[in-house]
Image 1 (cartoon, rainbow, N blue to C red):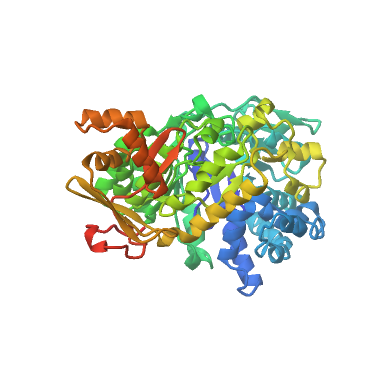
Image 2: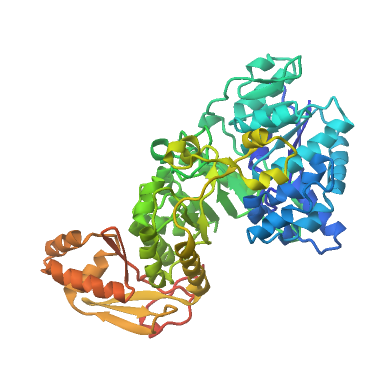
Length: 627
């Protein structure tokens, strides 16, 4: 059997497809392993656009649609006319939808003019391989381009079996695709490592197709038949991905000089926090919440092999949350290898300073700690299990360890009120030297999230997000089953408070790079050098030993009573009222952040070299390397 695996736009150009890499490796487990060919339609699309536009639609334009268009189905819309068989299908009203949301369309309209020609080209290139089976991996904006190509393949060769799988095919989305698009023969819902091998063996006549877990297929009457769920794949059946097809395609690509390759690696599945307390807004993991992680030995062995084979040092760890033991067992091994690897990790925002130092020493350059808010009450509404001051501590300590933090300030939770945000907005000027969020964003109702599964939590009204109507020529009920994002009535802050939050975050982003707040200990005194935007350039000295010790205690969040006890234990008598008066002064001076009875210090222990030279910089000691 010859199988062709397809990754269509809008997979990122700089990374291979993890699903294709996993399935390519997993195919070796078949009794009669098939020949597997990868078709990276995303790279071919970027090349096609560059060529047909005479260089005016670049890889950067592709990346804009791939990264930012996902919130509005922009990449799917580019191919919607091809799928519908009508070039004018919502060609003129979708731009108005974007304008109504102040969303930049990029060059999506110009791209759409080339979509039909590309689908014809891709179909011809695939059929030239004479495959026995074509499989599409579809996640996020890959649905419509994959469907458009699958339809053209089926029109050209009706007996060619078409398979779909991936995140967009979780139940009930996968069965909905199958019943609405009859050119799809098979859909795998859920984790595919076991089902994929079983399907290939069934197509080879070695087992009954009715026994393939998680498979939707067509019965003799042409109707969809859904087998039982696939269940969770044991971690030892998740292979190290085979990316040879992608590196071959990239090496031949016209856009290779515009792409900085990054490896994707999956060390775990599920979410150990979500098993007990799934964040109310999070729709990740679908039915596969149970956390499973590979051993540090297995992870390092696979990573070392991939890096050695492909000579790529940038690695994105794609698990939703890092295994807690990997910080202890894996990161030191990475550091000791001395390979200058650069990692991106998703972690929980309860990391201590010493743990963040391990990340930095191991070459982790980016983390996404799921900060989401700086209001403890809103974090409780999310079921985050973390205090706002702990989030600020992570931001501060990442600044000290040259770790870039990716986060968004989310709002719009049922039960929140203005007071939850006004207290944060008031303190944003004090935070300007810490890494700002990408933006302030109202939450989206996602399939599989507790907010979606449990309407009693607040979102009783729901319908498929508006942009889906511009993508599919289907009844609303069917679009509802295909969709992942949903529209609903707005909750939480609106009006002036929403605008103030957005303005505060925008100011923070505009002024972060030129700001710093650094302390230096001098005997029993502390000197704090303030070079933050919006504050006078100054040196603040805390020379009373008890108060200097109190500020150092606040490197971890404390309550007032907890501070007093700790100072007493250190032999420094200081009354609670004196501490409260001092904290009031410190907040006025922007030296601390306070929320829900807990306080955390804001000054870092070293200056970032990204910042302008602060006042009395010669007193700061050793500088830090650039982020």
